[in-house]
Length: 284
Ligand code: SAM
Image (cartoon, rainbow, N blue to C red):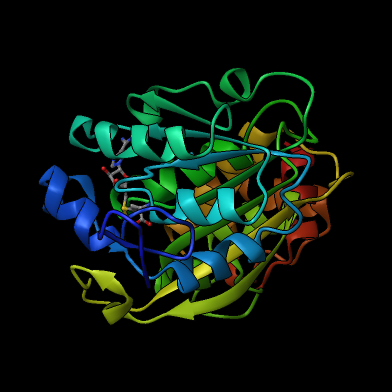
């Protein structure tokens, strides 16, 4: 930490330390908004670097909060960051970041669940999504981004923080306890991997569980399938994951559907590969 000429402490990016920002703007974390802030710019820098080359891209961030990850994205060369924040208390703090990086940060005040991300990204530059997501809406946002009708989607990659247990479900392979609807969806349309774990004490306030940063890259040509039908199949199959498929898929055609897809009706959902789920969806 350095001290600016006027005697104020500054961080490596020349802006005040995040603890000062939080205190000055009264940004005490609200549980209802899933606020667990990252105050260490080395850690937020690591997340920004895990997202890949940001120099020619628009980065979409959900929930910038006091701006720790936002600052790291800008410091790591993001040409433009569009950040959607629901908590109006954070807007003045984010305006200071915007002033420090003229023309590079746009803050959208609003609810990410009501946001058309493709529209706010605009046409032209490639888009990367990078966020320390509020846990209460993280899975819902991910599923929306994985099920966009247009594929390849509007983004080049997603680098997202989740609770470790959710991250494990995203990258899960067949035959494991974590394998389910999320793993099939993510495995079908993307290459997903856990980049690194983040311990609870890295956050203010610390959550109860370990978190993980997941990096997802869209497959250019996933196996052809209707996304809604695939959703119906995985919902039915994993809805009764301990049952044989002839039972759990009864409402979708049961034994005859399984025969059409060439799948043994005595198997259980968690043993099926993504390719086999796609075959089932295409047989409906
Ligand atoms: N990016 C900051 C960081 O890493 O320190 C804050 C991350 S905190 C886990 C989640 C952020 O998402 C908070 O700033 C919270 O206000 C914001 N948030 C919560 N619900 C939201 C929603 N529906 N739309 C947009 N932002 C939301």
